[in-house]
Length: 129
Image 1 (cartoon, rainbow, N blue to C red):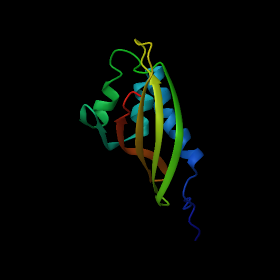
Image 2: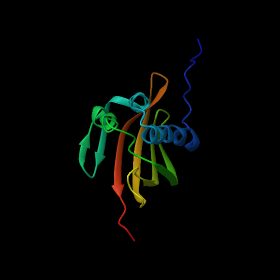
Image 3: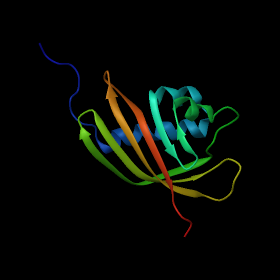
Image 4: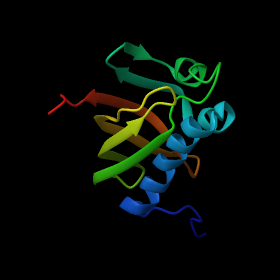
């Protein structure tokens, strides 16, 4: 009997595409899309403190939280065929601001029941140069 599940680790481009879906949800103010990409036991570690999935999705209560973003300096660490760590630089602008901000982000993606889902994210703001 053959195993139909893909046991190959994902590529950087595959995981980056998923990560960009999270960012697009922030730009579009799409809480449903955001919730679908985060696992039920999601943990965010942010300058404001710890956050769970409901906290992350809750930021969409009023409007989109991002106006524009650019992701760069991407790197992928394959921990296993089903667990990878994506790290990158995010430059972004909030809807009500003119200035851009920057942070380094690490996102843990896990393949659960054949579906890639974000289980952890840590944001580290960059000092203004």
